[in-house]
Picture (cartoon, rainbow, N blue to C red):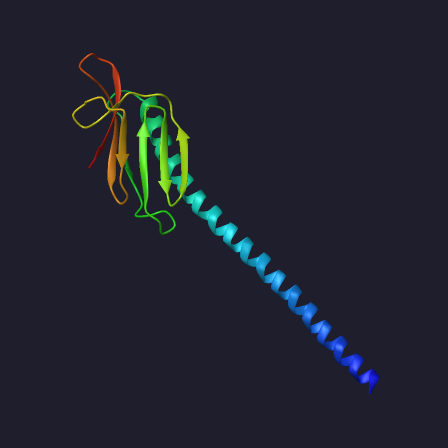
Length: 146
């Protein structure tokens, strides 16, 4: 009877230990999956902001009159976002995350060629980026909604 009781205690201890190892394993897998999802969201946001920055730099590097169109996606990994462009960078904000991409310093202007400090871009909209000159014959980059 004593040996049977010891076997039962060993069996319960083994099950308890196995259960703890299983729970720790699930926790590690869950954390890795969550980290992967966060990295995917950050990568999607980074790709958008880099694409816009590359388009602005390409237009700025070409002759006056060069135009490029961009269309923003509806969301970033099912989250709404906002884009702000200033004279030297493109910024994205989504969720509690922020990212930016540097651009060649530019003079920003709206459709009417009015110089502005920053331009906001909105999801699901299309925009034109155009290199122009203002009344003083200085180069400007116009960004406006189509």
